[in-house]
Length: 313
Figure 1 (cartoon, rainbow, N blue to C red):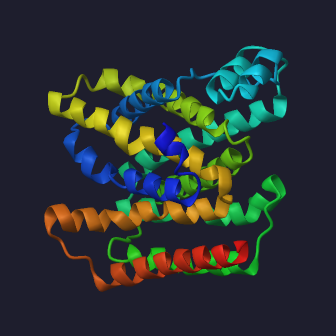
Figure 2 (cartoon, rainbow, N blue to C red; figure 1 turned 135 degrees about the vertical axis):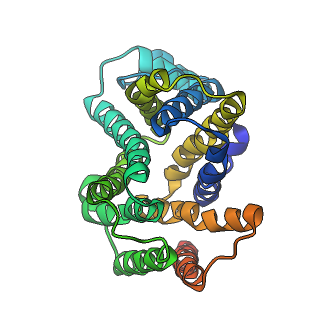
């Protein structure tokens, strides 16, 4: 846990995206219904986060109490968090952000699974990563993070790169599936906004809540389709811990010092790594459109990082 705290900001988000990208590989180990996979993955992730962070999920945020203040003074952030969750008056604004972020992330996970089932994988991932558009539109009003001309240029360049990147796999697809995939982009954008709108130590609680919501919503499918094989169970544990559990912690840590829009751009490393894993494990060479689109996205992120560093010095 201490090692994760040292990865605040961009490094945490980069590592988060890299771990997210292993989903395509790990999910091949699991032969089961997609919703049952989502439920099992989330319950494993939720338990892992609770054990790692030594905090149980809670459903309201309360104001500081003397015990919480003493814990903070003593430097024990976990004890302070637990104390605040148990006593004091309810902080309605913080509680609203807790639930909105949790619901949005749960929707992102569920809609992504459903979209993949109803339309092409390329359509689903492309439409999910339209999330920067919603951060550009609503971020300033909710977060007070003003947009710059460079932000608008970056969104256009990145979206063009995404279209090129997935051009070979893009099809008309099922219209209902495309709409659902587009809605996952909306929920992912607002998830980042509401995560960012919380105090630095609170966003991880929204992830815990999101995994609980996903589990409750999807667990009926686990009973309908029966128990998976032993190898599938191993895959589910790996998915829960490495593909979504650790990344949940890293994303909450990374958001502390990074703007919501920047965090979304960095998370696009996830789809960019998919052909890399395929090339490594299956020997398939990416197309030139894929290479050009990926270069546009990575180049845009690199330029933004350099400019941000120059401005900070």
